Amino acid sequence: MTVSANIWQARAAMCELLALSFRYPEDKVLAEAIASGEWGEAADEIAGALGIDWTAAAAPGAAEAAALPDPDDIQKELRPEATRLFVGAPEAACSPYEGVWRAKAEGVQPLLFVNPHSMAVERFCKACGLGRPEGTNEPLDAVWTELELLEYLALRAAADAMDAAAEADVEAGGDGAPTEEQAAQYKEVGDEIDEFDAEDDGPEPGDVVASADLPGGSPEAAWDEFMAEHAKVWMPQFAEACEKDSRVPFYKQAASLLGAFIK
Image 1 (tube, rainbow, N blue to C red):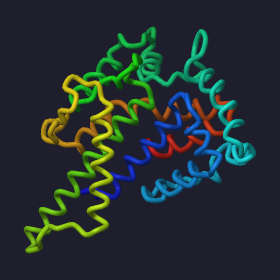
Image 2 (cartoon, rainbow, N blue to C red; image 1 turned 90 degrees about the vertical axis):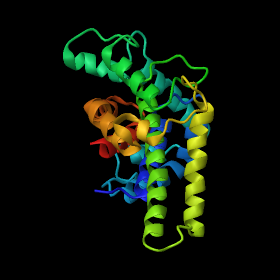
Image 3 (cartoon, rainbow, N blue to C red; image 1 turned 180 degrees about the vertical axis):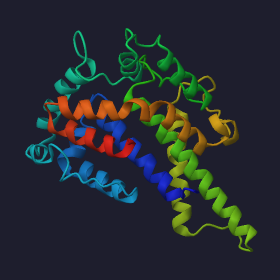
């Protein structure tokens, strides 16, 4: 079944929102989005566009999360909990790394970086023309990094879907010219793809891998492959554990949304 550009763009937006939700909150961007209600509104809108039966108001922890309207208070709550859940000392309460979850499932000692699953994710990223973000030195199988990869693939798929629609219009006798709304959508997607290329520290910075050279031969195939071989294998368990173990209501909400999206 052909997936429309609108759905691909909604998938990209969902991945972007979830990556922001689980990435360590160094600044107050997330806290301010929560306090203003922007996070919940975006989550509801994107979930609705994707036909996901989920609302921020009905999610676990929603009432408690709404009780903290000040971004400073939210930030003070988020940072220590993100440390406890995702960093930990000596062990994270809910590891954000695929390699750790896969190792536990296989009954072997989890090792960051040097495990077959982390290395497979790194190879996949390189095949997509992406590398470790500049200035970072963490495994690429973190939940937020994998979501950013999926965001990139969804944006590429959206751009290809718009190109295909224009070509189909020409074949049907039209001029292939986009409407004003379509032109704005295409520019938005293109700008977001350019942001990935500008921030990337991959093997060939600035050199975008052609769609036909992506894993599986297209962004859509690459998305399906990564979902099947990586995201769907461990993220549902991560989401369930995060929802159960978090002491902060927001992370329960975010984990519930991830679980609804990735299942």
